Each structure stands twice: as structure tokens, then as C-alpha cells.
Length: 261
Length: 253
Image (cartoon, rainbow over all chains, first blue to last red):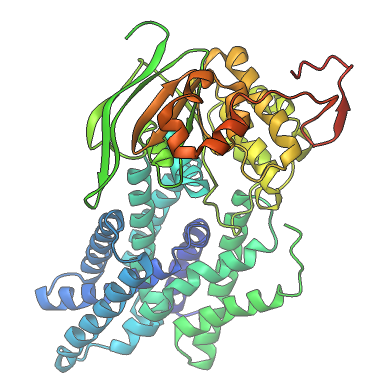
């Protein structure tokens, strides 16, 4: 197996593992559109990195987290409904990102790779960094699991019982932002949310507790990444769509399973 | 604050987007006392609940809490998506209280059989009882109930209401409740707070039901019909709405 394939597999698996619980929260809290918005804004991060000629990964993380904080703030003062607001920011940032990145086309920026993922771009040092970050995130998720679950069940109930709701929401959104920034290389901007949502949606039909749902979502995500990246390599198709199609296959295969839960 | 006063509200005001929802609201909650808020739609009842529990910040005035006060809260509804598979047992364990405490509370509300049920499969009345059990298991100083009888069938209502009334002594807490049901309110409450943005009148049910502001707000005919209504039935209904004969130690008036 060539190194670059091994590296993207390793990265993909790490991201799929952490995407299990975070994707479950995205489904439970109906944050799918929020994920899309963050993913689209990642393209501004790309442009920013190119413009300042610093590490693009850093500017993507920075932009995603900034947008996440902005959204938490804006949700507090909503004269517009949240999905309208997200629609404005999502497509606004996608358009801005596309225009900015295309201005650098002279430098042969592969826009297609950012939009749909690229196997060839992962390096060993990135693998190590991503594993460190994913380990930290998994630690944080375990540590905050109970309070995060409580604010997902009911925000006001959690608040009256003394949970620090805004802080918890912010940390959840920042983690989603981080996983999106990390997953961008493999899956690309357009399809990242699918990697969060589809395994969790599949897992929902098979499980009867939040913990099981998160865990099974991770497993489905890992299988999808392995199948998708394999297919991408053998059939020379873009990585992101291949992974998402594998996840979609798992979703469709479990459709006949009548949920007892 | 005197020892028995758990919560004191002084000249409380709340406005949002230039709209005054509460103004000049003052009252206090005492240990062992049930206070019920009544008022027409849009009177600010739910807003008042949110302000005293700290869900909304007061715009003016203040809410003084006794030190280390714990709230038990039953919201009007749970904002939980059906995509979250969570059993009653897990839901209860999310509050920081012991397993025996919430098993006991489930038994108290006669819903022990729902222990392994999924939350989103509960009926409205079952969910309401589970929420009550969860609030009670925390052994709160102040139990705040926003329309606790929602979704409970008519026959179960008075039984549940009597159960709530008995909690005051069992937990030695203050109960603060929003209710639409005038005749149940008038029968079981220590203090009634008649709210219409401001406190129109407050006091014992007997005196409130004679108050001109109350009569104006609810209309004379309604007020007369529900004024301190007492039951004279030969049976009453248990929590599931089944008729139970009264000679089995029924303390229903």
C-alpha cells in the first residue's frame, strides 16, 4: 500500500471515530445546517491561508472556530430564524471563499481538492497532529458527555439544574468546527456534513441508548472511510464522494431494519 | 429574609423588544406553601417562571434566593428530538441524584413500569409524571411547575394534583405552579397569585376569588363557578383515571 493511501486511511479512521459522537449530537440537536455553514466557511480559511501565506490548516481551524462562536452569539439575538441566518452565512461564505480561492488560480491551487477531498495531500506530520487533536477531543467528549447530553435533552431544564449551558454549547460547536476543519482534506468542503450525519442516522435505527448510537456511528464511519478511500484509490474517483457513497450504502442497507427504538 | 422564606421577588420587571411583559411583581415563596399563578393568556405566567428560575434575566427589580437553594423544575414541554434514543432510566440518571432517589420518585408517581421505556414513546401524561418524578428526586427546596397537568387526562388530573399537594409536606419545599385549572387551583392552594403583567391580587384562594380584580379578569360567572369548589362525589379517580370507591380511606372532601 502506498504511503499516501495509508496516511489518508489513518486520518480518515481517526476522523470517523470522533465524528461518531459529534455527528450524533449534530443529529440530536438538529445542527446539520450548522455543520454545512461551518464547512462552507472553511473555504474562506483556505483563502485566508493562501493570502497570508501561512499554513492553510491553521487558518481553516481558525475560521471555523470563529464562525462557530459568531453563530452562538447570533443565535442569542435572533430576530431572524436560525435556518435563515445559517443560510445567509453558509452560502455567503461559500461564495466568498470560492471567489477568493479562484483569485489564486495562477498559483495552481487545486480548488477541486478542497471541495471534494484529495488523498494525495496528507503527510506523516499531519497524521500525527490529527491523532493528537482527535485524542484530545475524545477526552473532552467523554469528560463532558453527561452535561452535553443534558443540554441536548432540554436546555432550560439543564440550566435550571445548574449546567453552564452557553459554555457547553460553545464547546460542542467548537468541536464540530474542529472536526470539520480536520476532515476537509479527506472529504472536502461540500460533503463533510454527510460524514457527520449519515453514520449517526444509520446508527439511530440500530440502537436504544445515546452511548450505543455514538459508538455504532463511529464504527459505521470507520467502515465507510475504509471502503470509500479504497474505492477512490482503485477506481480513481474523488475521495469525498466515495466515502459518502459508502456511508449512504450503509444507510440504505439498514433501511429495511424496522426500528424497534 | 426570614428563615422560612426561600425566594423573594421585589418589584420585578421584564421587558423584551420594548414590550413590557411583567412589571412591579412582588411576592415571596415560603417553605411548605403552595403558590399558584393564574391569569389569562399572555399574562406573563411562563415569563415569570423563567425569570425566577434564572432562565431569563430580570429587567428591573430583583429575585432574592435563600443560600444554596435548589430548584426542581418541570417545564411545559421537553425540547427533545426523537432522534435521541434515551430511556427513562438514563434520562433520570442525568440529574445528579442517586438511583434509589429516582426509583422512589417514579414509584411515588406510579410510573415505575416505565423505567425501561424510551422517552419519545411516552404519552403526554406519562411524560409529565416522569418529569415530576425527576424534579422530585432532586429533593428541591423550590419545586417549579409550569402547567404540570398538561396532557394528563381529566380523571388523572385531580389525583396528580393531590399528589403534588402532598409533596409540600413530604419534601418540606415550596411549590410554585402555573395552572389553568381554576377549580383545582382553588381547592388545593395556599396562596394564589393572580397575574396580568402585574399582580392583580394575591392571597388565600377564598379572598382572591372575591377580589374585584379577579372577578373582572375571569368574568363573574366563571369566578362564581370555580370559587373554592369542593367535591361531593361518592368515588374519586386514582392516577390512571379509574374510579375508586371512597370507603377505602379516601380523604377526598
